[in-house]
Each structure stands twice: as structure tokens, then as C-alpha cells.
Image 1 (tube, helix red, strand yellow):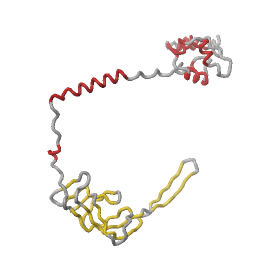
Image 2: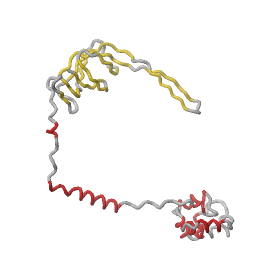
Image 3: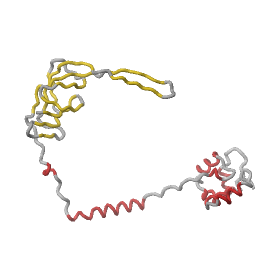
Image 4: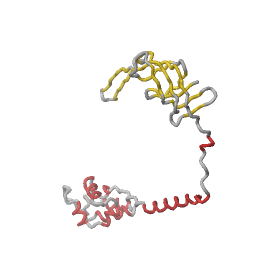
Amino acid sequence: MYAIVEMAGQQFKVAKDQKVYVHRLQEEEGKKVTFSNVLLLDDGKNITVGAPAIDGAAVEAKVVKHLKGDKVIVFKKKRRKGYKTKNGHRQSLTEILVEKIVASGAKKAAPAKAKAEKPAPAKKAAAPAKVKAEKVVAAKAAPKKAAKADDLKKIEGIGPKIASTLVAAGIVTFADLSKATPAKISEIIADVRGNHVTDTWPKQAKLAADGKWDELKKWQDELDGGKA
């Protein structure tokens, strides 16, 4: 006979007269200890499985001695940081001797076929269609994704600071910039240091939004800080 039992936070497969090393127990050496959280029993003929534990089952053992496990080296190092540390650790353990496996009162697991669920009634076959309809409604109600931001720094005269200021004001694409007036743009970037000429920015943005990069490049070669 053997059993699978939880002892000191760990699960073990144990049999009678077997020695087991578990995490340190509070019981003194020579004392008896009982573990009642038995998860599985096998008597050689029948296997009993708990749900999660088996009622009435237990493993009785005797505390043989307390000891420490083998030393484990813990080494840590960080590359290019000049940091490294080395420590040793020995886990506190208790050696126990399994004296008896008690199976009295154990409840046998129900046959597998007894746990099989009954098929759903035929009238519920339309349920998936309802779920699908709900998903379609949810998909329609989902908010639209925000437009992908453009690199406004490609406009002659716009630097990183101005670009971030425009994005914060809601102008994130070339199309947005092309619809803004030079006066409105100047108002938005009023706090940005420097003398900025915004007259050509909407027209440049319009060419960028339309994908006319060659024409934009040719025009930008003639500009100076966005000024014609």
C-alpha cells in the first residue's frame, strides 16, 4: 500500500517503513505525528482519490531527528556593474519514519461514467447564435482606434519640441496639421521659444498627407526654417 499525502507544505508518495525528509517540524524527536491530508490511496487492488482529501485517511509517522540539508551555493553577479555576491544555504529538515497508513472511512472515487454530464436539451442548441449576436453587437459598440500618429518633424520648421506641443493639442497627423490655420498653429506653439513661421506648414502637411514626397522635398529645399 502507498499513499500520496501532503506533509509540511509538500506532497510525498509514501509507504510503510519509509523514511522521508520534510521541512522542519515543531515536534520533538521521538514524538508521533499524523498527517491527515491524504490525496490518494492505493491498496494494491483499488485506488481511492480524494476531493481533494480522503475522509478518514491518515499517515502516521515518527519524528526520527532534525537535521540540515546539503549546502546550496547562491551566487549573483551583474555584468559591467562590479557587483557580485556569494552566499550558502542549508535547509532545515526533519527526518520522519512512516509507521502506518490508515485508510478506514475512506470514500472511493465515483466511476468515471457517473461523472459524465448529461447532454444539453435540444432546445438550447440555438444558444451559440445568441452568443454570436452579442459579440457582433459588442464589436459594433467598441470604440474606434485612434489614428496613427505621423512624424510631424518631417515638416520644414518643426522640431521635436513643437511636434510634441502640437500632438498635445490634438494635432497628431499630417491631415490634422493641413486643416489648421497658420494663426491657430502659432497660438498653440506660443510658449515654445524661438521665432517660428507657420505660413507654409499646412501646405507642407497637405503634400505629406497626399503622399507627394518628391514635390514636398523639392519645395522644402527652397524653404528656410519653414519660411518661403
